[in-house]
Image 1 (tube, one colour):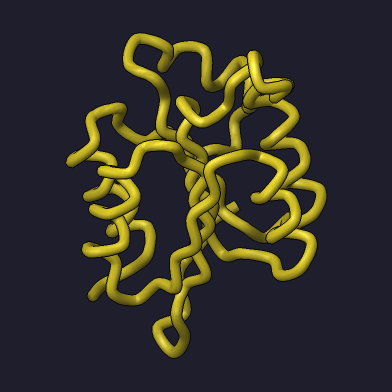
Image 2: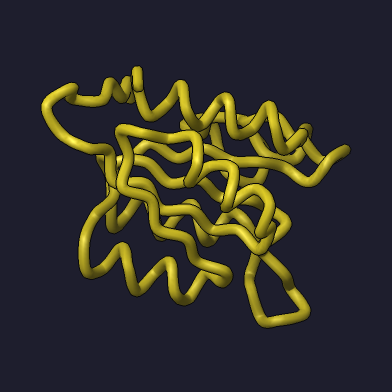
Length: 129
């Protein structure tokens, strides 16, 4: 699915991350997006049920099996079911990039693991400033 932001409205961006530096950098960088940040998958799910986003950033570092999270696959499946038009972008934990396609499928945007490069990529996905 090809997502092109409509220049007449702000992009609704949901971010699943526990990385405070990444969240601050994304918030400071995206001008055409209304960004909301969630530190666990349950809160992201609640938000998606209430209002479907245009773009979802999933930081795989925020998905933790020790806290009962099932993994990236179920998060992406839920997003595809509840927000089928949303673009899904995944930031992998460094060294796990090869797992993303296997776990999340083909229709995800693989972002750089590096924080600054990830923020740059998210800014591009949100459209011109």
